[in-house]
Image 1: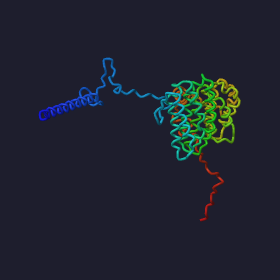
Image 2 (image 1 turned 180 degrees about the vertical axis):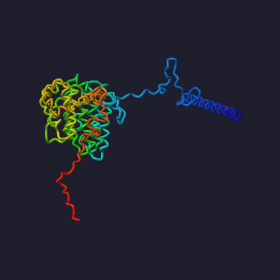
Image 3 (image 1 turned 90 degrees about the vertical axis):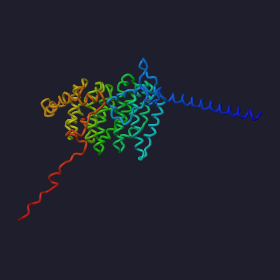
Image 4 (image 1 turned 135 degrees about the horizontal axis):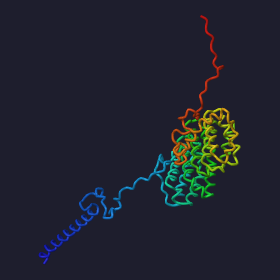
Length: 388
């Protein structure tokens, strides 16, 4: 019996082995069919042709979405915008940014710079518009607790420049919301009030690049802030312009800010400061520094453009005086800057200041760097001619 059973057992074992191999081959074919198209092409070579409705059969094969067009103010942002989807995520992100900004280690300045860039990326990603009122209030409250004033006093121009970008972008994004939300407007006003002294101090920097950053920041901050503006800064600007002991670049930053403010902000911001503004205009136009004088002339025409305080400007200069003749010559040029396609008109509309800015280095009257002066005649005595 054993001799007859042995061949049968061997046959059954071989048959089972063949069936097992066939099943494994079928599994392999099914696996390949899932990774390949019907024609055997790789997944990255499959056609993007959809069904009769134009839909792709595989969501992974959808054509890429067109890039989102950022507003002009964010065209030079160093990183892509940050998209936040929840209040909890926003709070966690802002807490992380605060921790990086509070680190005063000089070796970790790049982390502080990255944190400032992240703040701008949040604004570019629409944090003030996508998540509603709660997100707007949370964002400004977290920003107010950050050591932002220290960033304007940093010794590195990269950090001061990015700090200026952040505060201007915040003012630009919030200008429409503060008109409807009074408590939000108070918070933004407080934040700007705290930062303004540090920005004016930046205007006095011995580095010409950083001084120009400060002056441009003051100009942009006033220009993009909307009609509500920042009324509590008006008196401080006037004090800087009138004072004889203020650094010329700080004075110039105040002139630029007050000029833009009188063109953009509501007239009620200046009604109770009319006489003080008139005195500041006179001091600026007659200042000994040519840069301040040039900007002061623009401030005079800004005062004329403001209906609520125009009357106070009537007695600043005599109608037949030399100053008034010089002012009249440049009125058309100044008004053209504030047209819709002018330098200042574009700044108000887009938040972008052209390179040939009023405080830039292209103007002949720019004096953000210390002026070079000739030595007095008595300092070098001419030697008498020697006898032959």
